Length: 193
Image 1 (cartoon, rainbow, N blue to C red):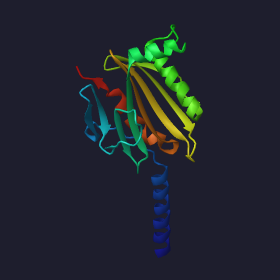
Image 2 (image 1 turned 180 degrees about the horizontal axis):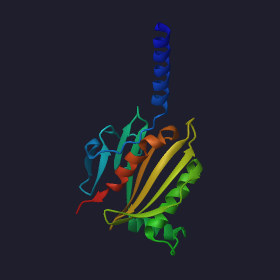
Image 3 (image 1 turned 60 degrees about the horizontal axis):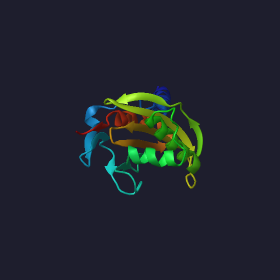
Image 4 (image 1 turned 60 degrees about the vertical axis):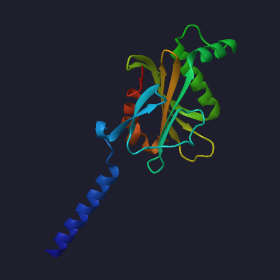
């Protein structure tokens, strides 16, 4: 009888360990898991409470948040759209057959491809975020100096005066864990007026 109880205990323990290791985070992010951050009285965005403000991710970013332990990072880069359009028309890199936000997306993606080895990239998705035209693209890439593949979640938003790139990233092994949270971040973006 003791052997049977021990065998049952060991098999249940082994099964629960397997379940624990194979379970994926499928729970939906809850509103209370986020806090709304206002940036320069120009825009707001919901950031998960587990991420903290930082300054070391990108010198050009107006917003930078991270959690080193969860390998979760988010930044926003914003630029005056008139300057963007003028510069790239002057460089003969602006495609008149595309919208401004599609041009911004394509030029940013070209820069990504020059700086890293992109392994997979989703087709661009058009959407509206709080009434603003936006484009989204996900990609997995290898970056020099990083052993593991990185997953990027990119959202490009066109405002009346500026274009915005919301960039969130993590290790590819944590892509599924953070994907829904990154979607909430991007879709919460809104201009203040």
